[in-house]
Image (cartoon, rainbow, N blue to C red; front, side, top):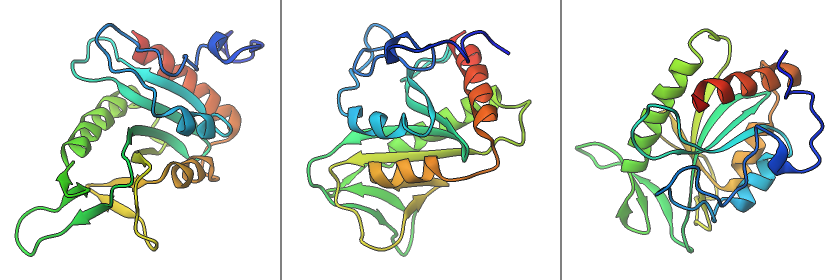
Length: 188
């Protein structure tokens, strides 16, 4: 058992699985001001790593990695102001993610790369489910159904927090251990 798992946590910033939201993990990283609300919801039910910049990996950092009883969630969050979120499925050609008329499918390609990175970190834990999600704060979503594209779910922050908190194959103690392993493996 690692010493940090049972350590007292008087402040969220002192906990090794929680970093201060809003502070870039490395120089040049984008500030994470928009996911404060999402992070607060997720911290109630999961162990979190914020703005994860894996050692040796090129590209942008992972906004959030949440480890709960439902498994490991790779989460990208973006703010949008009252724009309609939808999946455009043409008769011919690939489906695209549309936000207010603009194509945001590249965000799903980013999630694919981040999922591959975490698959490598979880290779020796095949029983741990790995999920990917894209959360838009302030978006207008369809009233019925869940948007999915390429194996990724696209959700409101409240719906995402419910999925992360859902019962799953892991016990709370197992999710703590998995979060600790990911923290060690992704930090370097």
